[in-house]
Image: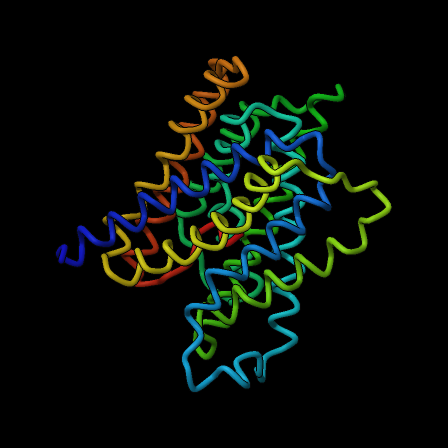
Amino acid sequence: MLPKNQLGFFYMFISVCAFSVMDLIVKWSDSYPIGQVLFFRGFFGIIPLLFLIPKDRYLDFYKTKRSFLHFKRCLAGLIALVSIFIALRTLPLATVVSISFAAPIFTTIFSIFLLNEKVGFYRWLAVFVGFIGIIIISEPGLSSLNFHYIYPLIFCFGLSYVAITIRQLSSTEPVWLISFFFSISIMIFSFFTFYQNWILPSFKDLCLLSMVGILGGLANLWLSQSYKFSEVSLVTPLKYLALVFAIIFGYLIWDEIPSQKTLIGSLLVILSSIIIFRREIVLNKSLSSARHE
């Protein structure tokens, strides 16, 4: 049996790998309507959760006294998920991953208004540095390509609110129940997209699309396990491996070569999130910046 810190490293690493492969499949699946891909994410995302339900909760595992907060978490998560799926199909893989690292910036801002937290100089500095990085990456303008950069930013907004609600829910709700309601909401939402002319997938495509759900579900659970077994300060930096994977996959599969502005901007965004992360440790807080898709 591995020591706890090494076990935490292992769970974080396979979580990052799972999210990276899921992103890869979503980008590849652009011939299928987004609503159909969402169905696979929701339906097959439930499978890993079924093994975590305690035996004494089989008959009432779905009961909760915080249904409205679950609803808000699911709505924010859906907005984030749809946005990241669109972004993956319209922008280079490394660009999307780079901007997604900005989620802790928005989480910091949301915490001021929703959790009444005080934000000091260092975290405000981090927010400023992060926004500079986003501007460098996206080069705000009026062209159609510039417009697509709004989707990973919406993802960051949605994910930030998800982090806030999960922080509130975690005081009473088990991780598997939070994830279960989210997967169910994804599947229900997908049913309203039948008009998009869903396509009957081949067996190979069926397997790949199913992996979107299975990998998404497992990645979130592995992420939670990582934080459970190891100190957050030790394992969180591993999440930036996602950018390395994105650059490699983007180059090998789609001949995408990150521009200099993307690399510089991503470094600033990563620096910003590291500053915020370090300040959270100093202040003994646990503000989640995990993807939770």
